[in-house]
Every structure is written in C-alpha cells, then in structure tokens.
Length: 138
Image (tube, rainbow, N blue to C red; front, side, top):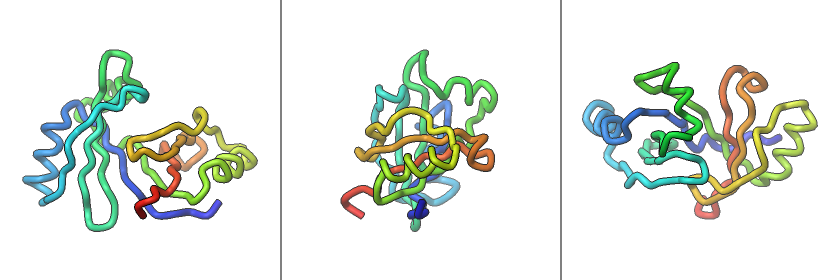
C-alpha cells in the first residue's frame, strides 16, 4: 500500500465546545469549522485546521456512540485515531487484508464525504488507523 498524506488526527472529547476553546485559546488555531452530526458513526465532529493536517474532534452522539468506551477509559478525552489518505480505498483494503490486517467493516462514507475504513489497533502498532480515499478537492 502506498502511504498517502496524513489527513487528520482524531481526538475523542466529552465536549467539542470545550475542546475547540482549548485549540483556539491555547494552541492558537484560527480556523475551527462548525460541528456537525455524523449519525451513521454515532459521533458529532468538528475539524480544526492546522498548517499541515486537521484535528478531528469527536464527541459521542447519543447513548450508543462507539466512543463511549474510549471516554470511559479516558474521561478527559485524547488521541483516538490517525487517518491517512490513499488514492484507491478498495485497493488499500484488499492489500491490508492480504497482509492479514483486521479491517473493521466495509468502506463507508466518512466525515469528509469520502470512503473510509478503520484497521484494528493491534495490527497497526497500537494505533486505530483510519484509511481514507483522497478527497477530490486535494
């Protein structure tokens, strides 16, 4: 698989509002996008632009959100995943499967409106890894 650009680092948070304030007031972020709900993934999302990638703030959306478990172990939040772009999502999935990596679900539309999938952290050096098809605007 050809490693593409780092697109974002996902940061789980109990409060997007509090986290956005931190990124603005402490880290100096000047572009913080409007939060939006991603019901298919059970999260609310807000992107913070940095000079070379984005921070994706993710907050639980409802009681069945998959990040409740993460926040139970990390009540203040923290790094949840890392996301890399690839030119062909299906080819990347097939290559990772051929290497014996555990792909978590089929490719689906992610927060950027492009296809994504996740790879189990035990197969990726301890990091939950999101693979994302490069958006057409890049």
